[in-house]
Length: 495
Image 1 (cartoon, one colour):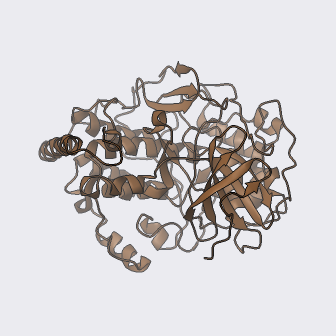
Image 2 (cartoon, rainbow, N blue to C red):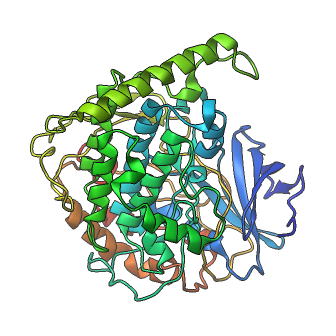
């Protein structure tokens, strides 16, 4: 598409200055920028107001619902500037596709692959438990934090193809007969290639393909461009042979996904446990750095650093071969996320949440859909400079649909309570009180009953909405009455 223009140096609403273009998708562009008041680095997504498919409307709606989730991008504000719709988010670091290509042999070590898999599954679980599918899971839609302290955290970004999959009653929406292809051909599920309606399992099939590429550096269909040919090859490789060179946990991961129907809830804990079993069997600990965290000289890796990383990968590969020969017993696995778990940044103090459900009844669930009472990995939260603004993000490549008119300027009042807001720039959010004992199904029902009327017109990805973009937000009463957690994690402090 043609460059749609926010030139470097442009000032938006007297606060956001454009620095440079950093990406471009099917329907818009993304720029890095800066808040001239506090020098915060930001990302700005823009699209023409006369664009046929206005994906920013959908993305804003979804992001506002997910702002209490610790693994998705932090939304700041949105509005209209001249002939453009825009959305402002906190700027992130490299995406996982870029990071993989920088590694030796174009792949991550097995340890980093497994550790990434746990974080990626947790982020998708949070999105699914709020009633949405991502539908475009791929390495470039996961990015690490920009700050050094956040380079070990993975954030899910780009919700241009997101879709709500539950009804107001909390039940899964009936599958449509034919929907067309959704996603990115290399990582999309076989169901997407067959134009079937997508469910939670399909997001996880994409995770599965991503992890294979991370560990092996490539997928069998990497050289194909035609999505139909890619789909045919995926069906050909839809056997354990696809992961024959990887530890046995990968074939178990695949077996679980193949057991799921459209409406089934995946057993997220079981899948994380598989990856954690494999991770700990390599002799690695939670403090083991990711491949990109290995010390390097400025600008390039030093020879000693390369040697260290290569030796580490060789050691892990040898351990992997040993595992393939002997197999692993998964009956008493511990989650890597426990007891200290995934580190979620948010500013000043750190709170250790108790893992009250622990792992009892977890490891022998089998391969069926997950029971909602299963324990979840606990989370450590640390509060950050902007009070409770939780996740970061920027990314391009939107391919969803949406519609409706946008306001000329943000007209939402500045709130001093717990409501999400657009105030022309700050977009601050505050945590709601924790409640560790709610059943996730009840939570989702409350969530749906309270909020469905506000979202039916723009959450489905195929409707239009005359509501201005900067007014797509939860009312204070709706948010206060909803007991939905950001995820089903029993230890999560965010309600």
